[in-house]
Image 1: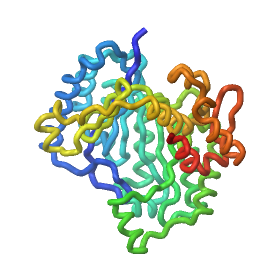
Image 2: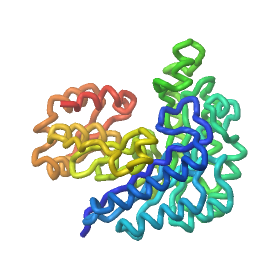
Image 3: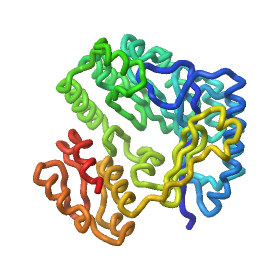
Amino acid sequence: MSAEIELYIHIPFCIRKCNYCDFLSFPAGEETRKRYMKALFTELKGRSGECGEYEVSSVFIGGGTPSVLEPDTVEELFRTIRESYRLHPEAEITLECNPATADREKLKRYRRAGINRLSVGLQSASGEELKTLGRIHTFGQFLETYSLVREAGFTNVNVDIMSALPGQSISSYEKTLRAVLHLKPMPEHISAYSLIVEEGTPFYRMKEQGTLFLPDEEEERLMYYRTKVLLAQAGYRRYEISNYALPGYECRHNKGYWTRKEYLGFGIGAASLYREARFVNSSDMDAYIEAPMAARSAPEPLSAREQMEETMFLGLRLMDGVTEEAFKAGFGCGLMDVYAPVIARNQADGLLLYRDGRLWLTEKGIDLSNYVLAQFLL
């Protein structure tokens, strides 16, 4: 049986940068896009030897806004992947989509090209909140796109929403939640993120100037609880701190990240985990276009200690937590051999539970997850 690997493909282009976005993304003209995609195809073909013994279990096309790509380009992308890699017949293949950049023909051709999962960025059902975020779509456009997505034959759809937005109330956030749950059919997956104000973004500058008015901590917590309660009532299982799925629809690609499955990243700024080493591509667009095969940093091998740390602070994001069996299989020793004091302390504080060979965060532990996870750095 072949070992499995995941592929991440970065499309950095967008129509306009959102006010909260610190991702490596920017608007670009058609010529720049063409040159970038040519370099990306070169990298995909050139790296295929690294995957000789692997089968690709998932592909995630992220950005930026990958749905700015024309169908011809997406078709060429998947021809390149199929010719260069062993793609599992039931691989999960996700593309991120902005409602303002999709149309009927594009979505149908994406589906025919092999994309079988779409992640649609709604963020909010409030027109005012969408404007504040700098989104280029309206809620009406989202509804139209969602209908076209289903019409095109997509049966595995994620919708992204955000809480703790400037000017957002608990009531307006709940309207967004309910609007998503009223979609027919309901999305198979919902990612519900709390806004983090990142350095270098317009929101960060506004915060520094005292002009960004965010919900207080108590309101933010209530939004988080409403998410959990309403989605559970609708049949969604929370399987990761910010991710909810109907039975059988957890995002396999992202679960791979949290369980430290090997993956290769392609395109500018894309990161990889391969043979217990991490490396990243240059974020310099000109350098990447000029020599995509030379854009990768030197691999940084992970020590056994670093591998253990990653296993814990990534794995504990999952509601299933980390099992004794998996830890022993990876490192030849038990969780308690390495982390007994940390586990005991956090159990006593009601933040962790250890039972039947499994360690996971309690509800209180999820609230304080950054504090708990930091303690697993040896």
